[in-house]
Image (cartoon, rainbow, N blue to C red; front, side, top):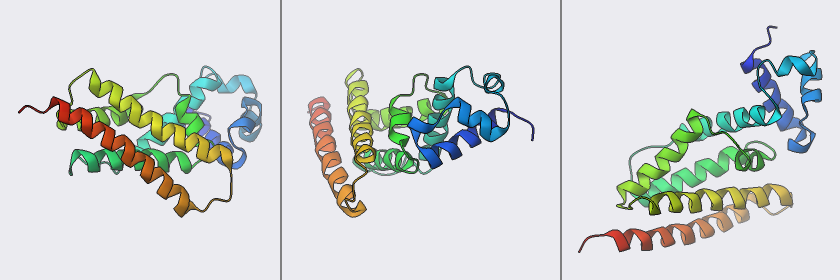
Length: 183
């Protein structure tokens, strides 16, 4: 097998899924790939760059189902649900995304979708950027806590709590939208 960025990334995601973020080390990844740790740095400058690539991959997956159709509320809800689901699909996925240091093109595209949705509701800049940050912070924070707790709370109960909180956030966004509507 030829070592390249895709091979390293795929192996890193598999290791993340098996062990979680705290046990994802470059040494374990190198052992899995049958190489020395230094070989990984030909493909990713450091562990943070590798984690950024994992986050980028996750957000590319989250972006796939998003549509420009629907009301701005429906689109924000779809965005938030896609964001959460992609993080929940990997142990500590929320921490990986929340600690991304250098967003790539898929991460930027994902955020641009949210910004465009808020713009379509009539929200001006810079409020639009601040409100997008509120949405992503809510989703990231809720999901980080959800994954950190590792409790036996049923998924349906966690989903209901997430939906309730998201409704509060969206209702708050609606207040900002109504302030910008022209009489």
